[in-house]
Length: 267
Image (cartoon, rainbow, N blue to C red; front, top):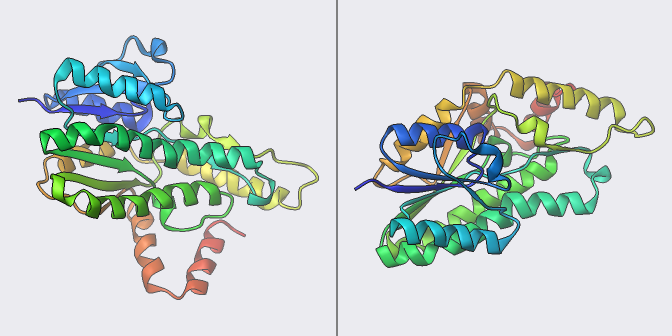
């Protein structure tokens, strides 16, 4: 029996790559977008869903279950970038980012758990970020929202153990996607005390994305996780040094690690 997969944010970038890879492996895949009419050429169905609107989550989950009779894998991939000096990011934008990157996945999880509990099986994969393991300069809000989802997953795993529902995190590094185009950028103000360091860091971040890894690496990693009987708590996918930076944070004194980050960002 083919497994049924739901991928939020499956219309582009990492989500699209995962979906296209999985249909080649004979999975039944549904992606989502806030504007599905833009993706009529998609190789798998794109349904209307905005992770900030719970009614759209419930409707889409219900639609899939009515059609397929089950839901085996949910990939919480929908997310939003945000950059800027924390002092200068409007509170509304900070809340908006957490609504997308943290509260959105929570509501998707809540919507699918009753079905997975009924079928006594299921796998939920939360796409987080290597940035969620460290507070990065001018990406602090993004780091915080993804880090919060990492910790939430750890708690959820223990709460779900009696129902044969698995959950894991997959933290990507920099991948060649269009995330930079959809990211909220706090304006680079001429009068800002952060003008030069923020501007320099912004250029460096965009360069990292432009030179990022092929999203198919994420697709292969997710496929391997789905075929794993007992997934680990955390997975990291990306360049060696990006993954190794997490190891260094565990090993090095806090101030030494902070100095490494500052050197990297030329701060």
